[in-house]
Amino acid sequence: MLSILIGVDVSYYDPILDWKNYTWDFAFIKASEGTVRDVDFPVQWAAAQGYTIRSAYCFFRAFVDQKVSAQKFVSYLGNDFGELPPVLDLESHDGYKDIALRALVWLKEVRRLTGKIPIVYTSPGFATGDNVRLYNYPEFAEYPLWLATYPRDKITSTWTEQQRADWLKGVAAGTIPYAFPPTIKPFQDVDFVQFTGKFPPGAVPGYPLGSKLAVDVNFYKGNMKQLFDQFSVTYVPKPKGETMEISGTITTFTNMRSSMPGGNYLDIGDLPFGTIIVASDKQMDATGIPWYKLISAKNNGIELKTNAGQLVNTTPVWCYGKNVKENVTIPPSEKPSFEFTISKTGYKTATVRLDPE
Image (cartoon, rainbow, N blue to C red; front, side, top):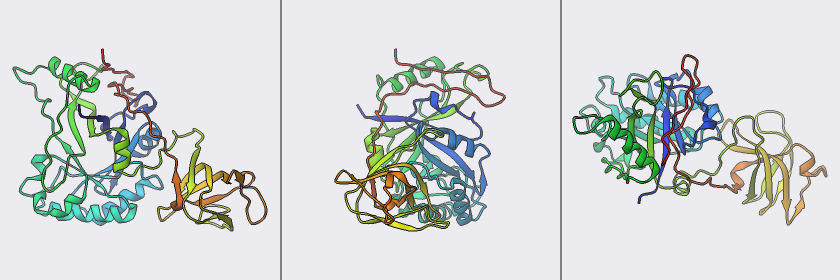
């Protein structure tokens, strides 16, 4: 059976989630629409940190300058780009007929600013529409695809809400196989699929039968190791407020500084190849380069010293992060239950489960 991960996507339409109550493998969180920041993004983005593998997305609007849109999007992320690449949500053409060209401007600018190859979200109908026709632009083959398709959402005389809920439950439990849809040209494969936009019937008070899901549900085609490998995930932060401890190995001679670049700092020594570091913090500088705040740096088991003779584990030390190979622990991949807590003001708190029997 195909190995899959289950994730969600949220925007200001959805409640701000109490992420520690979730077991979702990944999440797409709306950061902006055109050039405008999603009102809930800062809170949702911070709340999800450490509890899931995150990606931020921008809802494409054709009528804005796409380079400006990309720059605004990246500025909203600050120093936290998330673990998965950013996403361009292509589902509205606003009457323009050169959507593909405009989208490529955004994708290339975000790629330049973040160093990551963005993911493209779209649907077969939109991608092949007269104003879009992505199949005419081979450049899109470079980008991973997140495809929206809902084969089981439409209720008919022979497909009831209860049957659909049972199907969702079986898919989540792994007892019902799910076949990924074929890719659309010119994309090479379907990496993620948004496979439903509706809730199990009557699951949450205040959401009537057939209403829109509070969070859409998505699959990734692969296990957690494959997700990490495909998207070069090398670092998963701890939840906000928790003490972070990151271990890694120095891959080439690199220097130590008294603080992160950007302020007044001193070069205080060097770390040779093979040094084992332990850090309590990791931050990005203005150019997107990671820096580690060290709590230990050992070579051949001996704690290293700064040029002033101070042991690394006794004084503030930061090191350049591009020369650090982190020892990443991939979390176990278990089938999540369909569970979350609605905690936004105006919503009644409720927990929903679709557990395997």
